[in-house]
Length: 361
Image (cartoon, rainbow, N blue to C red; front, side, top):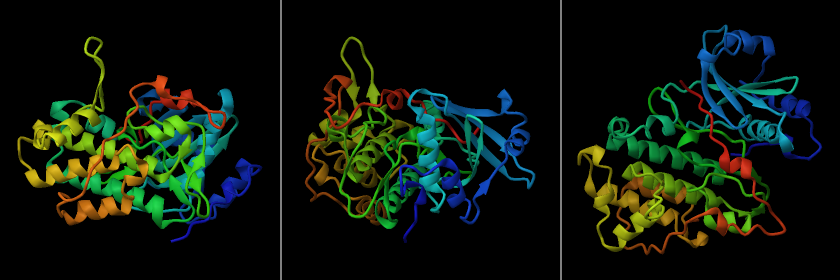
């Protein structure tokens, strides 16, 4: 499948040109501010369902009876990060469709504000639905966790390998995985996404993402590859299976990292010890162990050893053993002091502090 991204054909392309190109896509609408104000009840606080560094998300009801999520991006910010997010999301989502990607229904420009309109997600983000503690995780059966993990992998494989130009998301984490009414995962928030034109193997870019999920080689060098997303996915997979936090902060004993815990248990041949106790042992032990091994494959320190996302999809879907696959030491970034910002890239501190918005209640 090929997809055209006219908004990235030149750095001089304006918002209007970008929207004009996107509006030719079937199902994409350019909304008026009046429509969105009516849909959200004047953007009243009771309709706000999420908030981040670059804007808020409101639940809205269109005249046709459909429920939408309206993301408001303010561009009155230093370095116009909100403007960049607006263009990136339209570019990435206006011309592609996949069951595991959020659907962008349209957009709106009004004065200094930019609005993005999405399908509404009934079951919130994984950050809110899954991270609420033991009782919240109990709602996620083993089958649900496996299906969610497989769906996210399929969405990333589509972005990395099936469309042209390829897309690297750059911020895979629970807050950016939304769940529809059937708990089907949808990858969302493409504000940091990068396009890989032609046969590009990597791009040198400003370091942005979320600590804990950030691939260490990208954080240190600024060289972004598709394997950067693979690393983030691996961290997410380990989290889904174990229920453990990615980083446990402890002032006395020092921070404990999930990748270190899983690697220790793997070396001791005791991965079962890490499977989320909220599952009450109602899961296939071999399958749970295999998913943890797949997570470790994805977070190996040497990026070239990480599998492509299409291979991850196959491994999860076929359920075959990977006992004969050699897994090397995982990599992680203990703290920001390890970020050696070179002359060719810089650290986007706003992206690190950013809390993602939700497209659900």
